[in-house]
Amino acid sequence: MPSLRIWLMAARPRTLPAAVAPVLVGTALASTSGSIDWIAFVAAMLGALFIQVGTNLSNDYSDARRGADTEDRLGPVRVTAGGLVPPRQVLVATYVSFGLAVLCGIYLIAVAGPVLLLIGAASILAGVLYTGGPRPYGYEGLGEVFVFLFFGVVAVTGSYYVQRENLPWEALVLAVPVGLLASAILVVNNVRDLDTDRRAGKRTLAVRLGRERTRRLYAGMLVLAYVTAPLPWILGSLSAWLLLPLVTLPLAVKLERSVAGHTDGPTLNEALAGTGRLEFVFCVLLAAGLLLS
Image 1 (cartoon, helix red, strand yellow):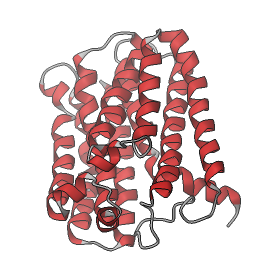
Image 2 (cartoon, helix red, strand yellow):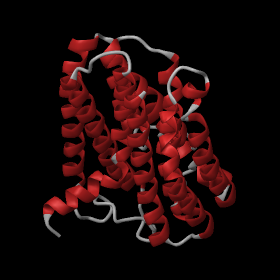
Image 3 (cartoon, one colour):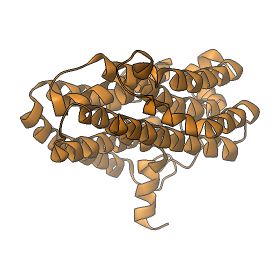
């Protein structure tokens, strides 16, 4: 395969909506109370993307070293375990991705102060320790919790803070559906890999809960995302345009049925990609609703 295609595979573009979506929502919320610093918006977006890619590369490298990515896994080929890229090159690419995120963060720190340094450092550390370090939290069933925190709460509130340097309650509320949908992407991934993860000693939340309860967790995450998104309108803060994400409900129902009724790799791979698309479209509509508010 061409080298560019291999590196795109390693970056896992299907997961990148989880990086883009919270920046859109946080910035759109900030626009309801004043003008936007577009350079800061671009820096936040690129920083989030580089952190996501760096996390994916780190995960690829660390899982291969721990023997978690075996030949019988149902997901796409991992470039390190599959022998497509030497481990050292993957590690260097990880450093480069995080380094580029740091460069974006320098501007954000200059704009919004040292709080952004803490946010960026914590996000990069969380990305590395997901499957790296002596006790990776992704192997202990905490992956979904950290995704909810860093691709929901931290990313949405951080994107808002970059623009306004304060934190209203609406930012925390709107971070909930964003984080839930980002976590749902990982839930599908772990449902797909449940058997191979169990054999590799990787105790993901799906391994701990079992397939059926994890499927119900996925459905619950989707339902709760749709329930929490319009709360600022219900509580009288923003307008009914926050109901726009309901347009994506048929896609959510289709995905839930797909995850609930299948165990084969191709179907669950498509459900994973579909959950990423759902989060992206949901958050674009949510951002649009904020702009119209």
